[in-house]
Length: 183
Image 1 (cartoon, rainbow, N blue to C red):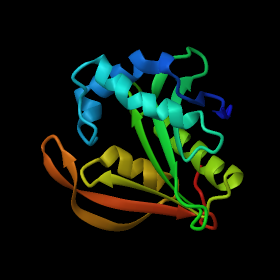
Image 2 (cartoon, helix red, strand yellow; image 1 turned 90 degrees about the vertical axis):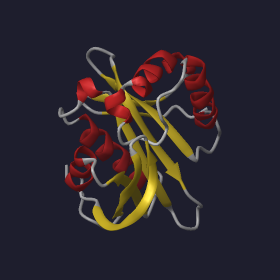
Image 3 (cartoon, one colour; image 1 turned 180 degrees about the horizontal axis):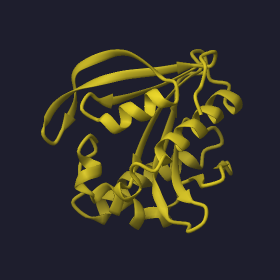
Image 4 (tube, rainbow, N blue to C red; image 1 turned 135 degrees about the vertical axis):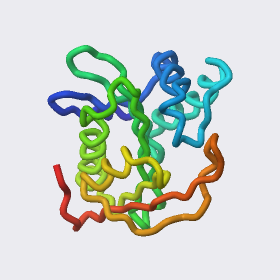
């Protein structure tokens, strides 16, 4: 198993374990964090466990292709949210990111800080060429985060996100290893 901890002054991104089940279940159960998420609110903690069991197993492979990190406050050790990085085929050197932040921590820069940490890891450690992300067109918070770190809006996918309030368009973003990054 890879011991991948990404650490800044305020937060640590560490690979999730089954001991994170309750925190992840609470995060997935919040209506406000579910608004722009396609996963949906789990019926019970067993459903959450089924979902994260695969994530934990993937994190334990010798060559991880789907990283799932817990975002943790360095001072309090509080669980702030989740961050994912899915790696494509070696030939294309491409990754895709996603995140979900507990609503108690919105507007405090944790999503931006986590995204910058993952971009650094993806480009500097994993040698990726391109990192992409998507977000619902009404998800103003995520749009701000993606643009703040230097990602470029490349297009709009029409009605590809099955959200609880209906189909949503999706903005596609990316950043290349040669693009300027904003901190």
